[in-house]
Image 1 (cartoon, rainbow, N blue to C red):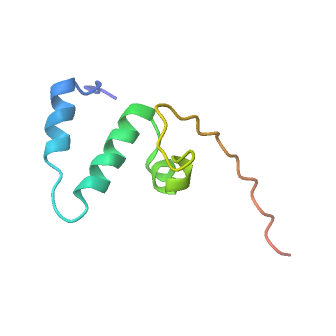
Image 2 (cartoon, one colour):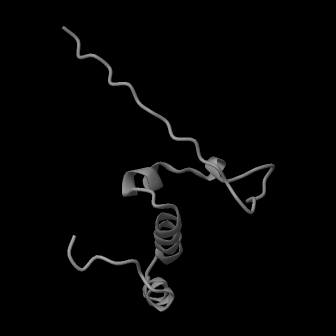
Amino acid sequence: MRGCRPLRPEEVVAVTQNFGGRYQWRDRALFLVGLYTGFRITELLSLRWHDFLRHGQVPASLTIAQQRCTPTPAPS
């Protein structure tokens, strides 16, 4: 894509500071997790709290295993 480049640190700060409204913290978290992991939006939206918690705490680093879905054959 022509003109595509990574965001500079000051641009990341500017974007995160411009989230507003009722869901600003959720939106900010989704943006930052997506930015730093490279997850697609569908991968981000499928994450749940239990994916992040270890013994009730959020660890310093996480490994999230990729799951492959096998399509279910259509009924005949």
